[in-house]
Length: 48
Image: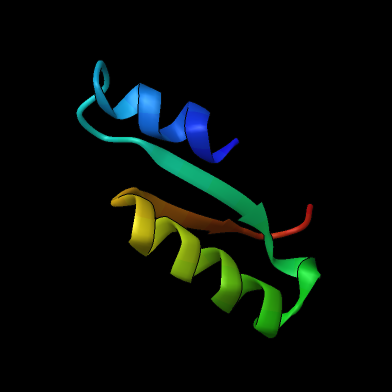
């Protein structure tokens, strides 16, 4: 998934990965760190 996000950055100016907020704060923070390292945005979606 990380490689896919990096590849997308070559063609798409605004890459956003998303997670659902039910995974917990620690995992959301870990996802944010990964997105920061990749240079993409993270969207935290509510569980509906």
